[in-house]
Image 1 (cartoon, helix red, strand yellow):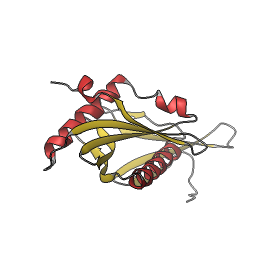
Image 2 (cartoon, rainbow, N blue to C red):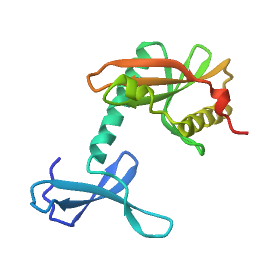
Image 3 (cartoon, helix red, strand yellow):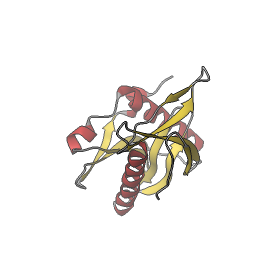
Length: 173
C-alpha cells in the first residue's frame, strides 16, 4: 500500500488488534522516508519507540510464526493458540504433542546460530511462567511441560530445538 503523505503528517495504521500511529519524516535531502511510531510513556510525553524498519520487522515476525505453525502441524503438533498473552508475558505458539504442553518461541535472524543465542534469561523466565500459567488455565492435565525454540534464518533454513531449556529453572514462586 502506498500513501502520498506530506512531511510531518501522521498515518494511523491498524495492525491486527493494535492501532499504531506513524509519523513520516524525510531526510534532509528529501530522498528517503523515515517512519517512526510513538507511544505515551508514564510521564505522559511521546517518545519514539520504533525504527524505520518496524513495519518490515513486524511482517517478518508474522511470516516466521506462520511458517513455524505449518511446520509444527506437519510434525504432529496441535496448535492451541498463537501469540498467547498472559500477565507474565507472551507465548508465540502454544502447542500440544502427545501429552506434552509446549510453548514454542519463534526466532528469525540472519543465521541459525544467531537465532539460537538470542533468548535472554528474562525472556526464558517470562515464557516459562506464561507456560505454567496456561497449564493451570487449561481443563486438561499434561505429563510434561517444555519450551521449544524454532529458529529460522534468512535463507529459509529451519531448526527446532526441543526442550531448549528447563522450565523448572525459571519458574517464579
